[in-house]
Length: 101
Image 1 (tube, helix red, strand yellow):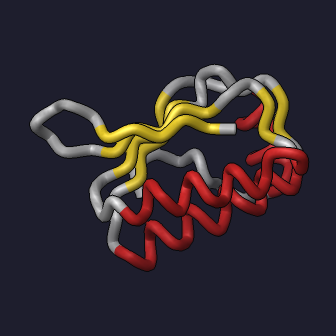
Image 2 (tube, rainbow, N blue to C red):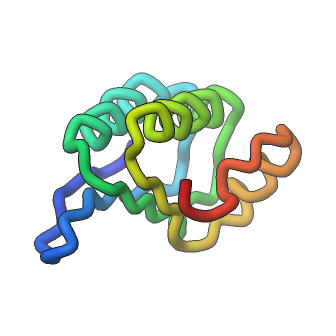
């Protein structure tokens, strides 16, 4: 699961915070909520700091989210540190967490 909220900051960014587990059981909800964030059509900041477990189904959703943001010209920034997410990103060769998109 993730929580998505529009920030109150004047910068007008959409904040997305991931829960500790991103797996196949949560992939549909993850996809829907990331779609809502994209629908805001504002820069997105994704906080991955709480993620302790991630599987390939969630990584597929994140890859599609990353590409959709890029296709729409929406700035995407990953914040926080998750060793599980970094390791999955590295093992799959995705390079999702390389900074602003």
